[in-house]
Amino acid sequence: MRAKNTFPLSVILMLIYSASCANNETTFSDGNKIDTIGLPPVETKVPNSNYKPAFSGQTRIGGVKTTTPYKVEKIAEKLGHPFAIVSMPDGRLMVTIKSGYMEIHDANGKLVKKITGLPDVAYGGQGGLLDVAFDPNFTRNKIMYWSYSEKYQQGSLTAVANGKLNEADGKVENVSVIFRATPATNSPLQFGSRLVFDKNGNLFVSVGEKFIPEARVQAQKLDSYLGKIIRITTHGKPAPGNPFFNKAGTEPEIFSYGHRNPDGLDINPATGELWESEFGPRGGDEINIIHPGKNYGWPVITYGIDYSGRKMGEGIQQKAGMEQPVYYWDPVISPCGICFYKGNAIPEWKNNLFVAALSGQHLDRLVIKNNKIVGEERLLADKNQRFRDVAYSNNMLYTITDDGDIYRISKK
Image (tube, rainbow, N blue to C red; front, side, top):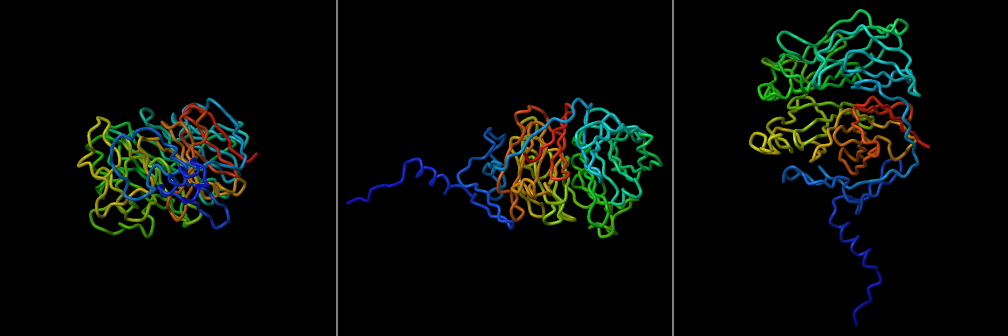
């Protein structure tokens, strides 16, 4: 006699679906668990290409949902045309406005001071005042660093300057340009750029490849700064230990190469490794772990296609000697600024990566296990805004939009 089926059909179907998924329940070192079994990806749109991922979970991972109650508050609005929101050492916020100035806001969003006195920026297209970072000894010396698009020779480029913040007078003093990502081009697009200090007090700077075909190919050339992540000292010199130091025909500031438009950088607090977000063309937005001397493939390999609909180059996604992204999106979400959640107020977010999505119009949450993405969630999609950057401070996230609105996300 046939054994009676004691499971509802819905349960059987769910088990079959779950078995077909690469995802499973992940238990973290702090005891938290996240169940990705049977959960469909958050991305449901048709991809731009039929390219296949290099490994399971490289794209369209199972969706997850935050279970800890949290609240979202709009704490400022209409700030102009912002690029970065960065936590200051004292917990306040510094916002860069692309037309060429900064604003200090308190943790509740109130404007404290407008900061001027910065060098002129090449404002237009994707250019302007870009990122800002604070010297490891900022509390004592008040030195800060910023990146911007600069008119240079017959074109423009990504530059990095530093200066001393005089908050009382609302300006920076003793300004010095410490690095220029030559060569200059006539393109107003894809400058990058984000700044982050490593544990030794050296400064990572991400530089875009400027979009135009004659500049794009320089992402693969080690005698050009285009399409690179560089690492410099606070004086703008090549950082000791850089992979191309004292190698003929290379620029010693280069840390990694083969990048398209890297607009997000942060250090993973769990591993100390540098993570990066990078715009693809049509498809192929990437999250990468940046290792010294490695080639990240652009424009030779990509999971995206050209804006015309044609393949990029030979239309290949893998090649020996070129790194694979940890994760990619197709279609694009336009990943801009990124940050890790370093607190424990929302336990399931600890060491998660948050990505500000422009065309995606949401804040993307990526759950990480052993340097792999094991879950994805889309937050703030109901705001219908282009999210430009995201910062962590005191167990809270702050994110800023192209409309100039600041949202604060915290535990209820």
